Length: 256
Image 1 (cartoon, rainbow, N blue to C red):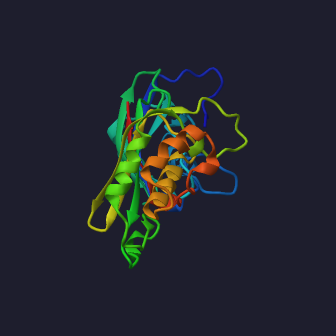
Image 2 (cartoon, rainbow, N blue to C red):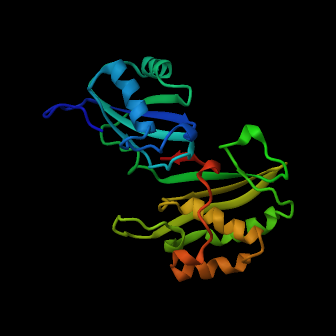
Image 3 (spheres, rainbow, N blue to C red):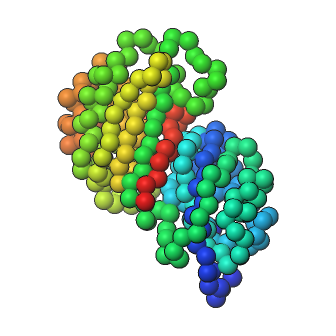
């Protein structure tokens, strides 16, 4: 969103790093008749420095998806120091959003286009009994024959540069380059919590959730780890698993 008047030339570009609870929001981007992180953030910002703002986010996130790290670019001419801005925002924002860092950047910095890699994690609570404190924060998968080592071997097939058409929900947007490079893809267990971690130079729409849904098909022995390369090569959404629920997904790191 841009509130700067025509002809204005902001002399600051501030990177603001936040974290947020996605349960309270319909994703980052402003939507009609729905509460978004962007709208909530900019409403707090206007109360502090007025309309002298132009903000950009590092990524779109879906309804219910969380962020351990999300970066915002703020262009403004307001002189408020970063430490004061951080404190003021945390005073005006709801408890579902926290500002963890604020720093001045070069004027040409862009939180999305300057990003080199992003890391997502997907949390799966693997216990017969649900954990009430993880409701909305992890997928409850009750079956005890869940083999994280099997899933980890499947996840390794995501590594490298591939056309990930099979792992993208197609919408009305014109398809672009569907190739992405995955640098890290692993599944680990800590007690009853199983975490899928994936890091890439970019992600397609619902890509991590479909990757996770495909790994769950491996967990259910409906496909084998060695089927993953064929699913990738097929470039067909119907070949991959279902889209996992948003509740377990977190934007974990944004790397510049």
